[in-house]
Image (tube, rainbow, N blue to C red):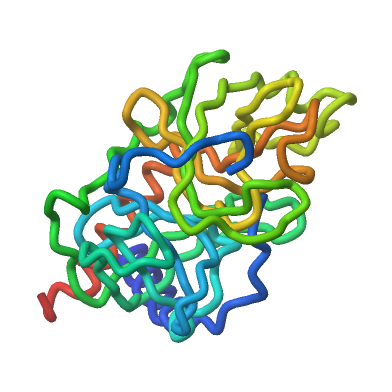
Length: 266
């Protein structure tokens, strides 16, 4: 094993006992309830008591991608795949415990830059008619401004809060240019190259609290993760998403290095 792999293995050991941090459930308003199980890749990240906190996406049978700010600690978390209604047991749900959490090493809690995390599951999910894998973009790929993308989640349906909806919600939003999102009328320079924006300048449709970490799907691939914003669905303030394509190499290298470090146990 080379030195770089050894360093990653040591980091994995440290991350595996991550105690977590306070969740900032980052910023579906103006959306609708889709056909049940239309989006089979989405998962609900919950506390071990069953409280929904964040969304995520299955990227293979053992791994979930979500936002780093959804990290509440490996021992406090449960992943539910195949869910649609949170209040009704449908028989399609698969509850799984995480084995390790890998928040991006450069995640910044102040700027929310590099807001991405991988979750290694203890056991594989069973892929079926209710659970499937999300596709990721190639490294560095971009989405054209104006392209319509879909974000889904179990987050609040109103900017004023209230009850989290019982069923999954979804909304379609256009990609906004970084220049517009960074303008003085909007986020005024807070959008980094690792973020992308989606929403309407008039507001009214957006992700909201409880949708964090959930997928923004463009052209059939997860290009964004719900990260942060100003309120929900406010005019001039679109939702801000982690730009997944900027992290594709990190995703692949993290998963490869995990198996490299644990090859004796496979």
